[in-house]
Length: 178
View (cartoon, rainbow, N blue to C red):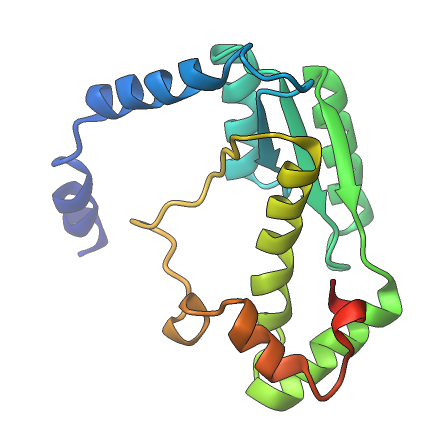
């Protein structure tokens, strides 16, 4: 059953040891950066990234940049929540929104080539996260993905820049996708 699987998976985890490990990692970055932020939190506005952002700021005292990648699917109320939540936490929010026509072309092209439009975001979102951290000099990205509970479909798990380019190259120039 689902409950038995959950118990089998999570009862074996030493949560106190994991938190100590997290604290050691955060201590290496808190207040030691030459830039404004200790870390970047990719922030979709969902429960996981909201809780992660809250913990980084309120529990761990990290100076945090929240980064939202607007892939065109967020509702008005979701975008309002993202703005309101970061404002209440006193966190800077950066929103990356690619041009709408580029997104539509990317989704259509990915769907035609692979039967799955999500492939466009599988590379877009991590690319934007890493590029933003690099450009801002932020050395720590704190995400809320849990490999124990959130496994991407196998055909998307190995999506990298090269595979993405091979799918998209006959519909886009490299410059359009940079």
